[in-house]
Image (cartoon, rainbow, N blue to C red):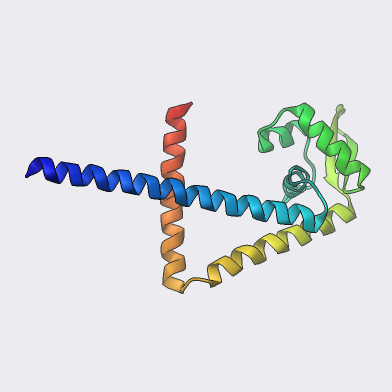
Amino acid sequence: MNKNHGKTKNELLDYQTERIKLLIAEMVECCEDRKFYESRKFDLPYAEIKCLMLFNGEHYLTVKDMAQKLDVAKSRVTKLVKNLMNKELLQQINDPMDARVRLISLTSNGSELAREIDTFQTDIHQQLLLKMEPTERKNALVYLETLRSAMEEVKEKLV
């Protein structure tokens, strides 16, 4: 009887493993679709959108700051910044404390676009939450936090 119970537990775990794999893949695909739509809507590559959104709550950033936040090479950020400057969404100034450092900030057009993007993203997330009852929302958030923590723990073991 113990063997059957053990087999049932293993079968359940196998089923749950396949379900979580599928559900996560579907959610990632949905998020990728949203990013694609967002890129088209705002006529910017998603990497540039992410770059603009780094300034939420920040007046100035350096290329190094941005590279760390985006987890990419400084050369990649330099290219993104150049593209966004050409679109008049970012500007650079010398750091008054250290002329070797260039400070990057949003232009007024960049600030306006970042606000529009933030509003769009907030609206999408609110629409998602409104598809659920209040207790379902609360539970979904708790379960997502639990899932995120578990994913972080597993990721730590991989590195």
